[in-house]
Length: 128
Picture 1 (cartoon, rainbow, N blue to C red):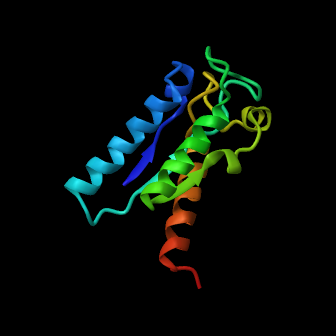
Picture 2: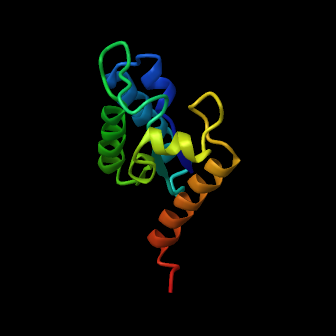
């Protein structure tokens, strides 16, 4: 199961405590209803600008860090797309976002899928 969330939470000024609780609830519910399911938390990438902060003054990186900590706490997989797409400016110029400067284009979706595949394949030891 892939859990990818955070950009809307950040943009709509969801508190970090509420963000952590929401992600924790999703993971706990998945563990209860499907205990054998593998979980991968995918954090957000920088959207809208390199320096954007939400109305509370928080940068997106704080939400990604909280997602990493939560994934670590529950011992589930984690992929930080911020490590892959390091700069909004570069990403925006490369055409991997749609015109809203938030959602990935088809090419961006393919890049995200490749990163998810890499994490899953490496975790399962399927590379030769």
